[in-house]
Every structure is written in structure tokens, then in C-alpha cells.
Image (cartoon, rainbow, N blue to C red; front, side, top):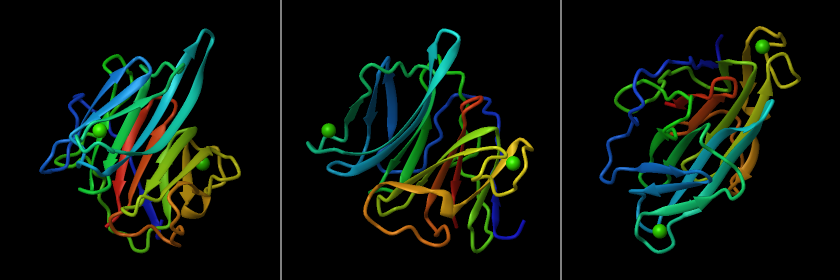
Length: 214
Ligand SMILES: [Ca+2]
Ligand SMILES: [Ca+2]
């Protein structure tokens, strides 16, 4: 498994939000169809990433949100509306691009799970160069956030064409090549770079794994 980064799902025993040490403390609260971020760097930008399963009777509709948002009035507060989409069953990560801090967050009733790691909630591994993420799950949503504000995403089905291990074995192996740009104008590097963040959500149980590349 050289050139690979193994990210394991970890069961959160607490719904406490894991935070990076920071001058300002990011926090997130939820409404039925909106997200409120406080404690962002004034006049800065944040990346808001979410995966929601919207109950629709016999099935759930999967929504993936990856938005770069700006605090235009300098109060460190950012509101994002997802009008018409019910988001109580969801899991989120927020990255402050100025302070390089991030948090994971869940609405109160969400069955999702946050990373358990302390102090920063990061899975830290130092395999160089990192070109793959390996993650348990059958339908896995990935977001790759660069400190530059470039954001890339991927959705990979176990055993599907983008699953690098080629098997339906309840895990996916996702190459950096698979990610597609959703924000920013910078070029995607050939390998994950130090300081890059990767967020992975298993859409089956809404468990969030966070990886910081070193
Ligand atoms: Ca604001
Ligand atoms: Ca597989």
C-alpha cells in the first residue's frame, strides 16, 4: 500500500466538535435548511462541505454541498441557505482558509459521526508522496480542500470504475486523478500536498473522516 493513505472510520463517542487551536473558534449551528457559521476570520473565506440524506418516504435523496463562502461584512458570521432541502440528516466540515483551521459538525438529530481524534480531529500519516485515499464504504463522497481555496470533489462507488482496487470489497481506493474541481482556479497537483485537507464521508452512515496531508 505504498503511495497510499489509509483513512479509517472512527466511531465518535461524543458529538463534541473537534477544533484546531485557533485565535477565533469556528462554530456551526443548523436550521432545517440553512447553516450558520460563526468565528470565521473577518473578511475571510470558508469552505463549507456537507453530505445530506434527505428523507423522501421510501428512500433518501443524497445531496452533496461544497461551497466557498465569504464573510463580506467582516463580522466572522456566514449564513448559507439551502432552500427547499431538509438537512437535519447530514454531516459537515468547515475550513477557514485564512487561519487554516477546520471543524466537523452535525445537526442535533443527525445520525452522522464525527472523527474522534484529538486535538485536531486529524488522521495523520506520513507516506510520501500521497496519491490515493483508501476508505471503507460502498458509496463514498470525498472533498479535497487546498489552502489556496481550490476545492475538488469525487464520488466513488465500491467496485465502480473510479475504485482503484477494482473489487466490490466494501472499501474504495480513490486516486487524486479522480477528483474534479468545484471551486478555485488553481491546477490540481499530481500528488496531495502538505497542508491539504481531505474529507471523506461514507454516505451509508454519514461518518466523516478528515485527513490532513503532512
Ligand atoms: Ca458576515
Ligand atoms: Ca473496492
